[in-house]
Image 1 (cartoon, rainbow, N blue to C red):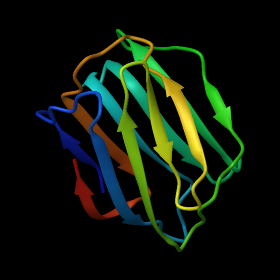
Image 2 (cartoon, helix red, strand yellow):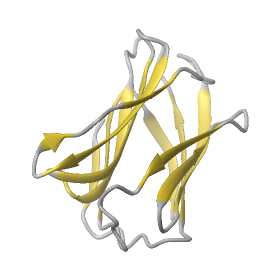
Image 3 (tube, rainbow, N blue to C red):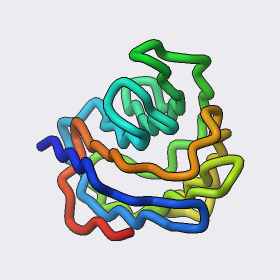
Image 4 (cartoon, rainbow, N blue to C red):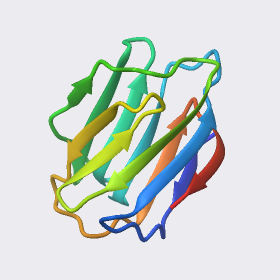
Length: 128
């Protein structure tokens, strides 16, 4: 199931707490934070078929340079909890095993209004 929120009001210092179940048949999922679907500060995309977490940003519907992290610490069929912290210069994603993925706030956003979750993640809870 896909989720889209248009009035998030996330600011530096805020932490988004996401908990969900990953179906056994999923290829991956993505969590997107930004102004809208065309302008994303953070695209967080675990890909199980490649055993990688891809992070990226999007500007006026154009993808920018991918950041790939090969520390995929969760797996299909598991329930996961992770935290996405917005800092003034970057996003810090804390994975279930404590590993952190850092991704720069390339657009220098001071506020995130938009969040979407797509693909194979069945939401249990979502809190800012």
